[in-house]
Each structure stands twice: as structure tokens, then as C-alpha cells.
Image (tube, rainbow, N blue to C red; front, top):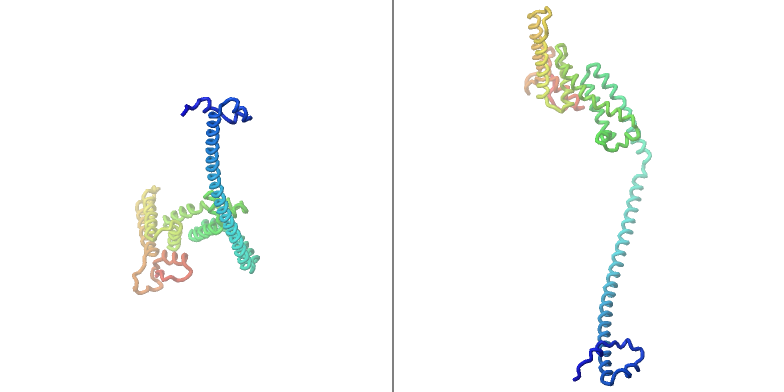
Length: 310
């Protein structure tokens, strides 16, 4: 077998546009070799073409399947949206059917309710000052708590937290009202505790001042007793440290004894509760349990079975 000519192996038949040129340059054996080479290349190209067409066909089938799945998914989404739209439409119709009763009357009722609350809120601070000037600290406390309740109903406390308040947006005058109300609590507490130090204060006033403190601080009767005793202790210290100015030791001792006796009697009248089942005392006897009776009357509208004064 003859060796392959390197020039013949590197030959490209595509370079020859006229087959007659091959017969002019090469002999019969070389032309047959060229033919076998060309036929081999043709078969190779056919195989590559078959593989390429097969791969493309598989890709085309996969793409067709994916498109079919996308179509089904899209149809399902469209159907779900249509069902949701119909459901929302039915809900809207049901809501309209329910609210067609008296929407105007309900709106007017809400409007007048808010208007009355705002009017009451504007009047409360003046009434609180009037009550405090008359030393009626329990009434001032009740008005202050009412004011706080109105703040909650009108959502005015949202302004103090930096949030949007629709009522304040429509009635900016209430901003000043909210700021003014915030100082009442400390003022009422200060004046109530100052009243506890007084030597010529009635039992009723002492009990009301203590109830005011309990309501504002959410404290217990035990804490109220401690506040009362601390106030009287401060009064005793003040009495002992007063300059004489010629009044003499005797007058000072008499005032001290009078203060101690008054404190004991008021502690009995305000805090003492008789044991259960004990006989009720007569009308001329000393009253007792004022703190609990006042607290009961303030915090409830009906009798709740709490102890009452003697």
C-alpha cells in the first residue's frame, strides 16, 4: 500500500470549482483517494447534521412542553383572579345590603358624639381649676380622669407618641388642651398632700384628699395611711421647729398635743373599719371608714358590699 501524500491529505476539494482540474493534476489512484476522503467527510457531516437536528428537536419538544405548562398555569391564575373578583363583588354587595339601613343616621350619631366629647373636653380644664380653688380635690381628680378618658376616646394620646391623630388634624386647638391637661395630675397631688398637713381640716376633706391620691397613683389604702402619717409627721416637725416669739413652751406643747389628738381621731374616722358582725353604733358615735365609703361611692354606682362608715 502506498504512503499517503501529505499534500494530498491537506487538499481541500472545495477549492476546485471545476472537477476537470483534478484530472489534470492527479492520476487515477490519487483521484480515487480524494474521492474516498470526500465521501468520508460527507458521511461525517451527515452524522453531525443528524445529531444536531436530533438535539434541536429535543430542545423544541421541551420548549413546547414548557409553553404548554405555562399556558395551563396562566389559565389557572386568570381563573383564580376572576374568582377573587367575583367573591369581592359579592362581599361588597352584602356589605351594601347591610349598610343600606340607616347609614346617614349612624354617621350623624357618630358626628354628634364626637362633637359633644370635644365640647366637654374644652370645658373640663376650667372646671378642674374651679374645683382646686375650692379645695375640692376629689372632684378635680374625677374631672381629670374624665379628661384622660376623653383623650382615649378621641385618640388624642397618639399625638404624644408622635403618631397621626385625625381629630387633632381637624381641630388644632385641642393640641394646647392636651398640653394643659398634662400638668393637672402633679398639681392635684401636690395640693392634696399639702392639705393632709393642715391642723384645722375636716375628716371629710382628709378622706377625699387621700382618695384623690389613691386614684391618681393607683395606690392601696395601706399606702394612703402611710401618706397621711408622713404628712402629719412633717406637721409635727414644723410645729417643733417654729420660733417661739413669746408664745412660750406651754402653747407649743398644747398645739402639739392638739395635733396628735386630731391625728388619732382622724386616723380612726378615715381608716378604721369595725370587725364584721359587730353591733352598729348609735348616731352620736364617731364616724369611721370614711376612706372606704368615699372610694366605694366614687368607683361604683351601685352598692358592692364594701364596708360603710359607722
